[in-house]
Image (cartoon, rainbow, N blue to C red):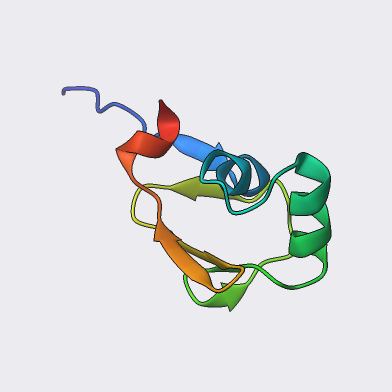
Length: 72
């Protein structure tokens, strides 16, 4: 049986910072806990929510799909 490589993950707050949707970790925390962020169309209030390839994050009027570029 061959082993499969685990899917890469990134935390929601880190994703928001890396993609430039927020300027700081503090801003990410406020927006997430304030209910201003969605993951796959559902409001997400957990900063440490783990995202994987294909998830779609919505914040500050934009929607961005999690791609392999987010993990570099």
